[in-house]
Image (cartoon, rainbow, N blue to C red; front, side, top):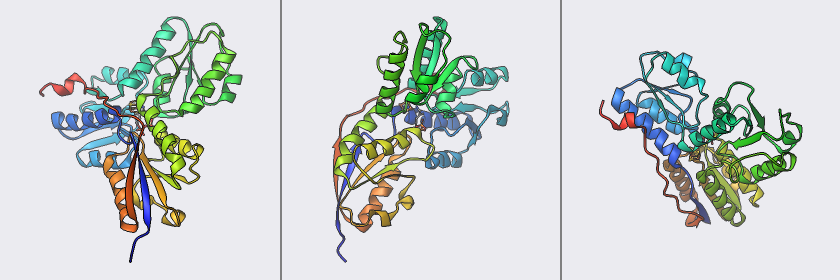
Length: 316
Ligand code: 10E
Ligand code: SF4
């Protein structure tokens, strides 16, 4: 039987960012250095396949430090943690390694600096997301005000409109955030902030690639997890850029083939925590059913790399 023709557009960049790559390496190197079990507070990155793979090697994933024994190393996830977490680990004399992405740590430092300068902080982020919890947790409870939408900006109650600064989550929608920042600047003209926002290079580049790819595609698949903020944003960006069928899939078995009936082009991308093996699995699933031609849609080239913490570079 002849297979129907299909063009697969492949976004570049897609998949792993430098912060995810470093965080996974940290867990692997900690297991090599200290042996199993090594505890990890929260999913090291939001991907089940990655987490399951590390669990097989001896990592134990927990949500809270309370679930870790004092005498085993613990790693904090790439999303960052409130200041109280390393403080508690130190008080318990635990060995801990912080896998917070350096670009998230940079936002933590910004928030602390503004607060030290007497400014009240506003954070643009998603309530309850671990990165937002971690960044807000750099300052005492109640010190950082959260805004999630343009509407929130109209209602936020500040101490002094002249003494304000803002920071953002790194994985937000670039376009939505620009609107929220514009609303903040309109209501609080003296608010201090980063040049644009704190969205990282990887988030920005993946959204740009989707914007270029989406108008060409009958359908778009984003490889990523349902709890992955940056992956969910890629689905939204794809829809808004003109691709009416954009879906998040964790792996090939999630593809709803019936919905793809009659299509002649599909765009594929992946969130920053999705490994390339899963993207290849999805491509292979299309090759099984279609006569596939792959075309790259490349909008940027990335060469960012972060070192692992020194403790893991030193011999045991
Ligand atoms: O839900 P997120 O997109 O924040 O996380 P992820 O694990 O899917 O991707 C990596 C992004 C991090 C660590 C946040 N900057
Ligand atoms: Fe770091 Fe950005 Fe990757 Fe988050 S998405 S881990 S901030 S590089």
